[in-house]
Length: 307
Image (cartoon, rainbow, N blue to C red; front, top):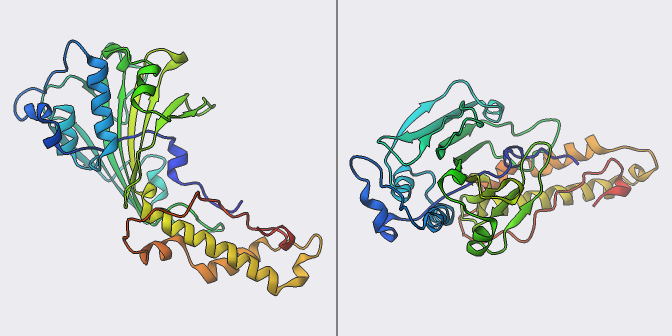
């Protein structure tokens, strides 16, 4: 398959976005001084309320709105050096890490923190990463990534120290969760996908080791999960598939056994369709969903295998 997986797949599914504070008047208490304290009773529902608010709305990129939901103000630190693995693919990047400006009910994490050092406290990591100048062309057709993209991430670790939120609690709150089995690169997860927005989409993930209390919850908002991106991607993939079929129709000799035409087909498709960026640049903002599930084309090594 001639495609390059996007950073969504590489990073797994972390997750979260949000709601206006007018809908959550009790959360607006932490304007000055220390952060609003969680209740002593009903902590499971309190935490699930906030996770759902973060996941369902369109504000994870806005630390003021996130702070209103979590009851805390955030300071920010901007970095343009020491890129992470995924940031290193871009020509340039900008990463913003958010930490509480006042004493909070959680401890602040950083990207460099030891994930095994949670202790008996909830740890929160909140950051945004913007990548600029990702490769548009290479020896493979790029079906996923645009030249620029954005990812907003919020991770809570040590939730089992805060309250015992069971998988049954999560399933009652979020019917239709997607279950992902553990792999050699990731833990078992239960995922909630809110409806995508025009320019981004979010994923809320829960991790409960061996089916016990939820130990981690995370939210990520991806610019590559938006409806406009999906519409452009669907049209680009359709163009590439049609170009492959057209090449084979115009080269009947290529159907001969053993005649490999993968590089020729890809070059022909790239000439006709250019890139995903070209389709995204001219895709209007209509807020319409993409037509169906994305099916990546198998660019053929032999024309008889064209799909």
